[in-house]
Amino acid sequence: MTAADVKIKVENLTIAYGSNVLMRRVNFEVKKGDVFIIMGGSGSGKSSLLRVLTGLKEPSAGRVLIDGVDFDAAPPVQKKAIMRGCGILYQSGALFSSMTLAENIALPLQQYTDYSAATIRDLVALKLALVGLKGYEDFYPAEISGGMKKRAGLARALALDPDILYFDEPSAGLDPVSSKLLDDLILEINQSLGTTIVVITHELSSIFAIGKNAIYLDNETKGISAYGNPHELLKNPPNHNVLSFLTGGKK
Amino acid sequence: MALEFVEKQQILTVVLEGDLRRYDNREQITELSAAAQKARQVVFDASHLQQWDSTLAAFLYQLLLQAGVRKDKINLDGLPENLRQLLELALAVDRKPSSRSARKEGFLEELGSRGLEMYDGLKKALSFMAEAGRSLGRFFSGRAVMRPVDFEFALEDCGYKAIGIVSLVSFMVGLILAFVGALQLKMFGAQIYIASLVTIGMIRIMGAIMAGIIIAGRTGAAYAATIGTMQVNEEVDALKTFGFSVSDFLVLPRLLSLVITMPFLTMLADIMGMLGGAFVAVLILDISAPQYWQYSINAFGLANFLVGIFHGFVYGIIISACGCYYGVNCGRNADSVGVATTKAVVSSIVIMIVVTGVLTLIFEVLGI
Image 1 (spheres, one colour):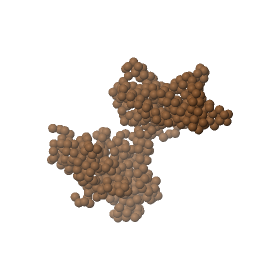
Image 2: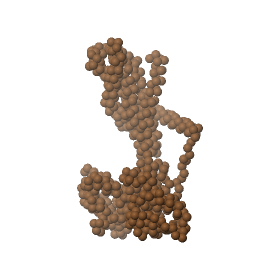
Image 3: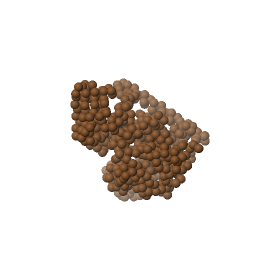
Image 4: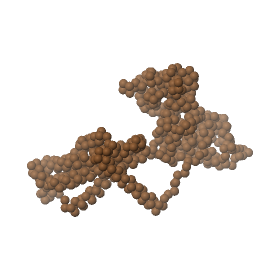
C-alpha cells in the first residue's frame, strides 16, 4: 500500500482518561475506499478511538493523519475542513429533534455550501431516497422509528459528500432485518461513492458481512491484537481472545 | 461543461460532458422531463463526462422523478458505474410514508380539541396531586419508598445553597421599596414611615413573593429539568417497571424539602428586605438607626409575619408540584425538557400570583 492509498494513518496513538489508559501506542492504517471495522469488547476503547479519529478528543500521545495531514496539529481552518470531509452516524442517529428530517440534512448544506435553495431541496430528496426514506422530508425525528432515525442520520452524514464515513455501533438497537438493510446500505454507499468507511461495532454478523479489514482492540494488552480481513482472522486467529470474540465465545 | 439532450426516433439521449460538479441548472429539469415523457426510451451518453458530484446525481434523480416515466423506459447504462449505482439505489425504494393528517381544523373543531386537551391536562394534574397526597400519607405512616439521601440532597439544594441569591434579591427589593416610598413620603415630611412601609410590605407579602419567584426560577426549573431528563433517559420507566412509585421516589423528597425550606427562606427574605430599607433610610435619608429600628418594631405584627410565612409554605407546595408535574409529564426528546422547564416556571409564578390574590381576599374577609 503506497502513501497515496492511505486515507487514515494512526501512529503510536495513546488514549487515556487521567491515569486510566485505554490504549497504548496503537498503529494502523485505513486505505482509501476501505470498509474498516474497529472491533473489540465493551470497555476496549472503541468509542474513545472514534472520538479521537473525528477530532472530538485529543490523543494523550501519538497522532492521527488524514490524507497525510496531522489532524490534531493542523491549524483550526484546516482541521475544520478535514472535519467537514467526515460524516458520522452516531448510535442514536443524533438528529436535531426540533428540525424536520429535511432541515436536519439541509443544515450542513446551508452552512457550508452556496447552493441555491432548489439545489439543496433536491440534494435532500436524493440523500433521503438513498437511505430509503423518500417522502419523509417533513417528518420530525420523534415521528419515525429507531431504524429510520439511523438511516436519516446516515442521510445527514452523507449531506456534504464526505470522504470518510464513521459509524458508531450502527446495528445497536436494531432488529436483524433493519440491521441487515443498514449493512447493505453501507456497502452500497461504499461501492457507489467510493467513500472510506470506518465502522465501530461488536456485531459479528455486520463484521463478517461488510468488513474488508478490521482491527481488534484488546482489553488486556491495551492495544491491537489482530489486524486483517475478518474472515482471515477467523481462519487464523492470532490469539484466544480474538478467536473467542469472532466465534461469539463458543468453545 | 454541458448537459444537453438530443431526440431521435423517439429515443431521448441525455448527453453529459465535461466537469459537471456543482450543477445547478434547475430550469432544465422541466424541459428535459417533458421531452422524456414523450420519448419511447431515455438513454444517457456520459462518454465525455469528466467529473461529477452529488448535485448532478440530485439533478438526474429529480429529472427521473418528475418525468415519471416507467423504469423500463430508462436506460442508465451510459452513466458512469458509480453514478448509475447511486441512482438505482435512490430509485429502488418507492414506498410512500404513511400519510399524516395535514387537514386544517375548523374553528369549532379546534375549540373542541383545545377543550379536550385542557380536560385531559386537568385530569392529569388532579391525578398527580392525588398521587402526591397518597405519597405524603405513606410518608407519615412510614411506608413511603423515599431514599433519605434524595431528601437530603433536595433539602441542601433548595436550602442553604439558595441563601445567597434570596438574600441579595430581597435586600435589593427592600432598598427599592424604601427609595420609591421615600419619594412620596418626603413630600409630607414623613420619611420615617419608610420603616413601617418596608417592614409591613416585606413581612406580609413581598418577602414571600420574592423568595417564591427566585425559587421557582431556580429550584422549580431544576426539578422539571432533572425529572424531564430522567424521562428522556427512560429512568422513570425503569422506576415504574421496578414497581416503585414515581411520586414517592421523585416527587416526595422535592415536595417535602421545599415545603420545609420555603418558610425559612421567606423569613430570610423578610429580614434582608428590612435591612435593605434600613440601608437607604440610615445612609441616604439621614434617619437614625435606633429610630428606624423602633418604627420597624412598631409596624411588625405577628399576624402579618404569620401571613407571610403561610404564603411561603403555600408557594413551596406550588413550586415543587409544578416542577415535578411538568418533569414527570415531559416528552421524550431534548426539546421537551426545555418546554417542561419553561412551563414549570411560568405556571409556578402564575399560580402563585393567582393564589396570592385569593388568599389576600380570604384574609381580608377574616380580618387578619
